[in-house]
Every structure is written in C-alpha cells, then in structure tokens.
Image (cartoon, rainbow, N blue to C red; front, top):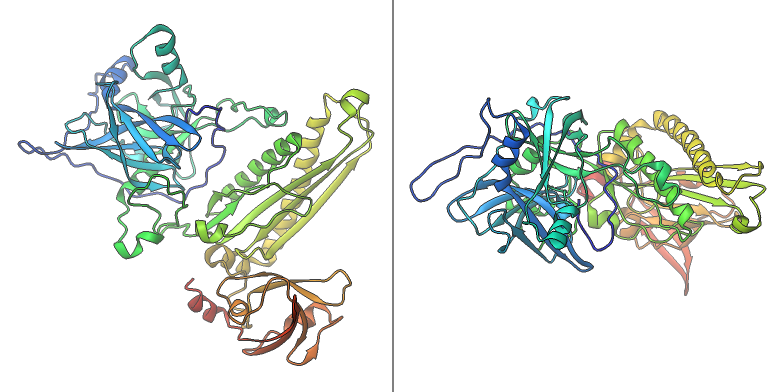
Amino acid sequence: MMLKPSLARMPSHLSLPHLSLRWWFTALCLTGLGFLLPSQLSATETSFSAVYQNDRPSVVYIVAALATGAASGTGFIYSSTGSSSTIITANHVVEGASRVDVILDSNPRERYRATIIRRDHVRDVAVLTIPAGNRKAIALLDAHKIQEGSDIAVIGYPRAVKRFEDLFGDDFRPSVHVGIVSAVRLNGEIVQFDAQIDHGDSGGPVIDKATGAVIGIVRGSLLDPSYAAQGLEQALPGSNFGMSVAAIDQVLNSQPSPAAASASSLETAPPASDNALSAAPSGSSAAYRVGYGAPHYDNPDVEATSQIILQRLSNYFANHNAFYMIPVQFGTASEEGQKLSGVCDDNRLNAIVQPGVFWTFPRIFVTTGAPASVAVKVTLLITDCSGGAFFHDVKSKTEDTRFSHRTVDREVVDMANDLLDQTLQDFEAFRSTNTAAWDSLLKTGIPYDPNDGRYHSLFYYNVTPDAHSYRVYAIVTNGPAAKGGLLVGDVIQSVNGKPVTGLPLDQFGNLFNSDTVELVVTRPGGQATLTIHPETYEQLLSSLAR
C-alpha cells in the first residue's frame, strides 16, 4: 500500500479475468552479458530467517512523485542483465506519478530513475526497469503450486521502517512479516493471507517459505463495514490479499502488437502519469469491462453508508459475473444523481453500475434527542455508456422507532443493506428475462437482444413532466441518432409526420423500427427537422466497431 502524507484508503475490491498463462523464466549465462538466475531456496533452507536473508537484496523501495506529494511502496527484482534490472510492483504504487525512483537494499543512499514499461490497471501490476544491472532476482512460483495453509513471508517497506530510521537512526532496510496462505480466490488470481501489512507494503513480494519464490504481490485489505459506518478506516481482520503470480504472468506474457497497443490491456511506455484504464485482453474469458462507482456525498455519514453499499454491490457483481469491475470516479451527488461524462470513452468501458443511498433525519438529534423516524432510499442504476438506463430500481423504507444517537448509524446501514437485498432480487428477475440484452450490454455496450430483428437508433427518452411529449436524455456516441443530428434535450414533436403528443410508450418506440425515420424536434432556438437511419443489431456492431 502506498505511503502518502494523508492516510490512503486501502483498495477494497478487485474483480479480475481468468488468468491461466505461465511465465517460464529462462536463465541464460553468457560471459560479460546475461541474465542472473533468480534466487530460490534449497529444500533444506526453510526457515523464515533464511527466506529473509536470501530474498531481502531483491526487495526494493519505490518512491513516486505525485501532484499531492510523495508516495512510497515496495517492489522486487524479477530479472537482471548486465546493464539493467526489471522490477515488479503494484500499479497503484506508481499510478499518476510524474517520476518514479527505486532505492536498492544494497545502497539506500542512491536512487535510480525508473521507467514504467508495462502496467495493467485491472490486475494492478506494473513492470519497471532501472539502469542498474547484475542484481539478484527472485523467481516466481508456478501458480498451480500455491497451496492454502502454506507458510509465507511478506517483505516490504511499511511506514514503520521510515519511522525507525527517523527516530533511532536505524539502517534503512525492509521488514518481514510472516503468516500463511488463507485462501486462493477468483480462480487463482487472488491470494488471501494473514501476514501483517501496512501502507508502504504495496507491491512487495509475498514469498513461499518452502522455496523462497514469489507467489504474489501485496495489494491491500478490505475495509471493515462496521467502522466505515462511523466514517473510520479499519481493515477487516483476515482480509489481507494480493495479486497472485497468475496475474503477474498474464502481464508479463501479453505482447501487444504496435497496432493494438492503444487498445491493449497493457501500456508499454511512460509517462507514468497516464491514468487511462486498460481494456480486456483479446481472447480472455472476460473480454468486457463494467465501471462501477457511487457519487460522493457532502454528508460524511451518508458517504460512509454509500461506500458500504458500493463495496457490497461490487462484490456481488464480481461473484456473479465473469467481467471486469472497474472503479470510476463520480462527483458530488444530488438527489437526482449525476451522469458521467466521458468515463466510458476514457476507460474503454461497456456499461456503468451506479448505486445511490439517500437517507434523512434531523441531524440536530445529537443535542436535542434521537429522531422519531429515519427514511432510507437505495437506488441501483445500470446504464450503457451514454447514460441511458438499462435497469433502474428504487427501494425505500421508513422506520418510525425512536433511535438512540448511538445506534442510528448502525440502523441506517442495516436498512440500506436490506433495501439492497431487495434491489438485487429485482435485478436478478430482470436479468433472467433479459439475458440476451444483458450479455450484449456487457460484451458490446449495446443493450439489445441480438436476435430481436428490430432497427435501433441508440438514444434514450423519457416523458416530459406534462406527460404529453418525449424528451431525449441520452444519445450513444456515433450511433444512428447521433449521426442524424439528434441532441440531448430535444423534445420530439412528430415521427414520419405523425404527432407523438400523448402517444403511449410502446407505440412511440415502434415508430423507430424502420431503416429511415423523419423527426421534427423542438430545441432552444426553434424547431429542427432530422433524418435518422436506424440500424439492425449486426449493422450496429459494424458501424460502432464493437
């Protein structure tokens, strides 16, 4: 985890694709120039002390220069030639950095400027190179040999390391914490362990005691919801986890062609400040991506509850679907929520999952007494990248019991969780009857049944407050409606010469099931006449390059 001037929130969720490729490191010894053989303990050297002494020289301290100040983390030397060394760390350690420096255990006084040669935002793995060669490297264990219950050691540079140096003038060297592999999760992509970790350990190697080989890198811990409800940050006991060597192998083995580099899951060059999220690798069993996030709330109590709901929702989708869940940033929400602008294009997403939490009661109850009632509302909105709703559900509940100010926050969390359960039940029912359209949204960003045989214009509308007209609220970029000149905010007056005022929703939608549609719309400045050419599903795939 990164060490920043302010305490950083540990990553709380991860959803990864199936990772199965194995990176075989080949040691080639040549006179004057070659690879150093990664270190691995002999069968007799199985003490934690031996692990530390053997692998410590390969563990490095990483300093990232951010706009908000310096951040730090850990990495390890994966390979080394006569002139350079390759280092593996967590991507969030170097995310957004304008400069990355590496400090080796052998010489804490010297810094090496690092170049980011690969990064994968989904798997949270980054590969660096530094101009320092002939260094000791650590081998990667075969992913299939990771065993639950086996002993492991985590070597890293947590906050305590720097503190000991500042207070006592102690030598700057990494620390070691030991434990076991608690579980191997998500088809071998995540390693859960019970060794102690702290901010600064992110990217550090999780090492198999028996072999001295790396089984993963530190990612973080899940947050304890009971503390989050109080606005506090506390790790959930037993939830430390890292990216397994299966994730690392996938990053090392992927070789994007120059033509595909911009769409690859890997970024192959600096600058380190490039924040664009990656696309799924071709051929993956989960080659599509879904963004998720919750708006931020001015009220810290609502914000804490919202983050709990968001964590539950992201875990739910990660466990019930084979797609990437990518966190995206929202602004501050109003009661009506907030649409995202450019998020899908920037992050190459196909859909957005957005929960919302709203609850009300007099905040003056702290001094005047507990509230007589609490009202909680939970919403779930799933959209395509235009912001058009594919699924929208709202659940609300009011409790009239008078709560103590000591229990009201806990009660709100319980109510919100109950409402989320109901919302997810509604979603499951909706998905079961719209399976083809749901799969299409995830894979292509087009929320239609591929076999419906209809023409589609790719815009969304709702009924105006007077219930007489249809107003456009979302348009898919480069879709038929966008190409025809339709704009968000347009109010449709007629379709193919037929007035649509007061027309039922199903009849209105059927007017667009044609390869040519003439529209008259009103917009600021007057009326406009437009021609739209709706397309079939197969035509949309081609024209949108999906």
